[in-house]
Length: 141
Image (cartoon, rainbow, N blue to C red):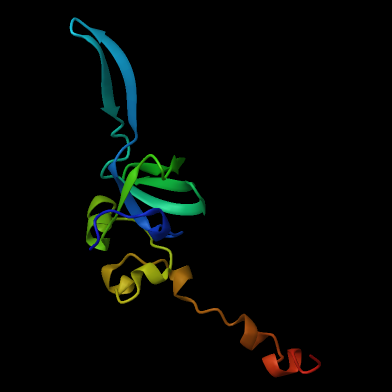
């Protein structure tokens, strides 16, 4: 698995975490003179973040926790390094998580892992139920 995600790698529905948090820098006075001091914000490091929406350079995420409802927040992808999470890690941290159907999880049997919601299993049959065909819709074009 690729460790660091670039801006273009991030998409809605992914489960990611912060690999390196936002770094704040400030100038401090010391006996040796002025020095630059850096401090990393570790707030979301290792936490399960679900990407809800993207408007680059910002992403809206839900921070999942096994003890409470998700916390929604936004992050600036220019200031933070992200890493993609594996399904075993996500399930290990949040055993009762219900994954949304997404091609991100293609090839993984979600039902077998017991993490897929029954409402997700249903296929979209709206075209079949419409009572018309694609050919009929576009016949006059």
